[in-house]
Image 1 (tube, rainbow, N blue to C red):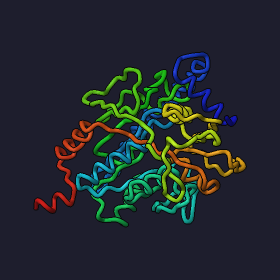
Image 2: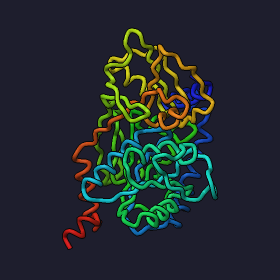
Image 3: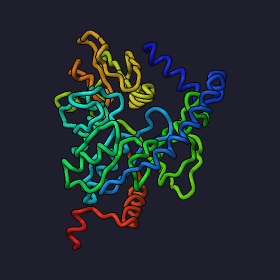
Length: 350
């Protein structure tokens, strides 16, 4: 474990209780919370509405909770219902590419993850729909709609706290941590007060009881590893065949909770010779592990879009999120109640 990931792990552990470290940071959390409330009011006054319905999928805690798998599942459902979705994102920790650093940029299947961000690239490759990134999500949305006028709904991957983009539906995603110790950053994991108004809560893992805002419904999803790992060329290998007697299986993860990925691998009876925990959104530019014919590298899909540049022999293990049908039924019903309809469906019934 690197020093950065070790510090990150220590802080995330402190966020689960109100221990000495959390109490030491508590005065700073009061300032953060006050600023968050002020910023929320400021952004709402400047909210920009686009010509299509906007759905935001995010969370109120720092670190991954399953937003990107949820976005992928929702986009696929919308496609099956006749919608033509597009995805917008800030592209967390992406570096400036050509042109103005804040300008909207379209993500292609071969984009550099350092320029567009790892999660937007993964979504573009997996969903096959238009994806744009920009410092301001409203700018990304306008650019996407100008380039792809057939898009009739936008899904924002992350962005609950970025209210300059007006939204019609909000989904808050939680993993097993829930809201942790209930304090704001840096004493706890909260980016903003909870409960706060949202339409739905989706829990990607079982966790402690969670207070719900008035009118919100909660649904439970399931998480599992796909049965096959994926090579850089797109071919697959059964997960059950990995880690034989002559192979050392090395798991690498640069995500918010690397140990969760390692535990899921062990849960499907894989023996890990070594684990490498790296900071979330790690770029792998400075990471070196000499190739060893006895070793097989496995990583998450988010890591693979960056790691394959250096280690094309690494295997990506997809995460499969099982979202209950009741959640999608509720989503469809709300869109219909708000008067929104997929363009292809509207054309067929005109």
